[in-house]
Length: 546
Image (cartoon, rainbow, N blue to C red; front, side):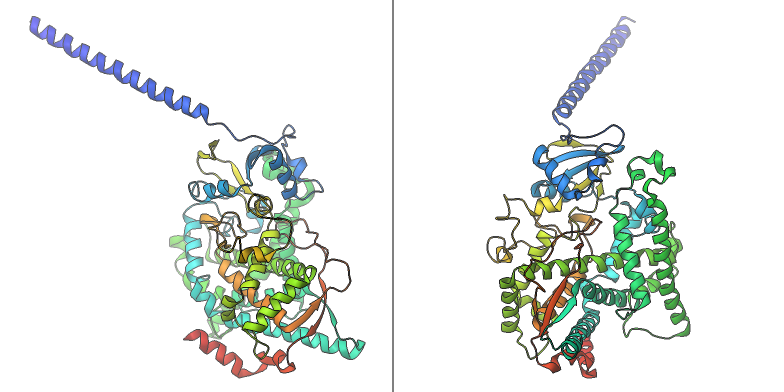
């Protein structure tokens, strides 16, 4: 009996000892964790926040947001937070911290914040560019990259880019001929921002839907107007995005304007989609090769209900089309406009680029996409343009899905993230004479820096999971258009005054004023009709089908 009691007492003592040791161990672990977490501070918050609205009043003023945020970075450092209503936004202006965002914390920041513009104008977040991180976004991005924007598919559609660029060069030449007859002048005045917009619309329009527009075509005017309004509204600070309980008031009338723009955009896309469906039903063919809408219809037929339960097929096709349309049209036009503006203000760089084209291509044949590998100074010009005037001076916003540590700061779940690309691209610790146009830097000190998301001091297309998937498509059009223009025409400013470099307000960094140039042909006359010969189109198609 005594032995049993002793045994029970021993077991009780042993159990109690174990529990005490476990409690002490857990206490020490929790204490260490609490001590460690207490050492991880939150990023500094910029001064000037007001109750309820936070820093909204500072970003809605006359100064462009990237300038305001850049000045805050000078005071707070390369990583800080601002309050926009009830939300906390992290602003990063340093390339090493940006690298940490898109490598170590890439998945954490892979989502997008929910905003009214994406809800109303991107089919309730069906556009993969604004979709929150999840199965739908992963499936759509994978499909778009594999079936639409792969290197092979972009190459297959090369004939569209060649045809449209050559047609545009011919139009410019005919403008010069008409001007010479009527005004007896050696140079013609051409507004290039509009011309670039019409040219890129035809490249992107034919790629997506097989549609081609004349410069003054009613539909072309309608598409340009709607896309510009889309970007304008996307770049507007909507109070209800940050103070949700005032949404019913529609302060500023932005919700009403977005609904009108969404309807206009949907009407265009619905017409395009109906044309494709009717063509498939009747067996008629449009472009010699399937456009993006054809491909999407074929892929999604019969699979929408199984794989995409949140959206119907038509919505997915229209949302994907609008994603590619707005990204491809405005962004490429923006970069071409800034690049030519910079060259006109720096005629020595313009001449150097033309001399390079003359050396490697000559004046007896049109420049081709295959020539681009030899035009290293032209590539440097494009990189320098992206550095000085990225398509957006601020990155598209990200949102953290979990708590994380960034630059030794604690970042809570639900924090927004903005990379100030303008500040990043003007960092004097990275770029010598950061405010000056110096393409040569990409042939010397920064010759290994590219724009494909792996060099974090230059991120015009973003980086990581959310990097722009249309980079290759955009660059192909960009290089060919600029090279063809420089090869084909002498270009100069219409006056002795520098080209106005003022940017407009909006999601994209569009030049505020028109870009007028004086130009004259620098090639034999028959070169401007190179695209007229049927054999040209045959050779183009044969070369990309091999």
